[in-house]
Length: 178
Image 1 (tube, rainbow, N blue to C red):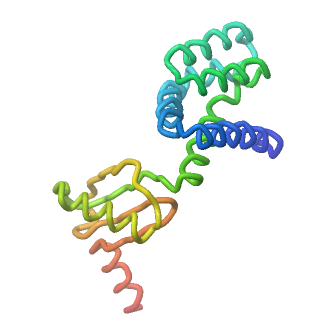
Image 2: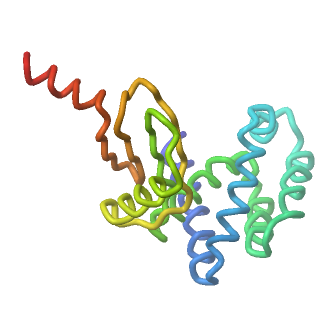
């Protein structure tokens, strides 16, 4: 994406996030954006929106389908997208909205990777640890299992990492022995 297009997507995203924060509807906007992105993650849908072979009216019809199940603020936002004929930028705009929402509200998904499944109390303790250490609020806890880490856990949120896995400790030990 070129700089002009990136600036454009950031401008659209910032305006929607500002309205969401101003109107105290960040949760609704987040849900709307996630729903739209779940559809746009299909490569065929994304190709449909960016294709020059597809008429503007067909693209408009697709975006109008998103409006049917969206909050009022998202409906208005999508209408602006349609009026300015920015349907092809819908996915990057929505992705940027998620980033902006997280940054402005300091609410992030927390990813925990462990060798085995975590208990509910472990999940709660790790969520609290991440919130404290990373200075953020948890949106969702995403648990991943990777037996190769042997033990411990890897905690990620907002581009920050706490890695207490045995695998990483063994790698550090190996590097120190060289």
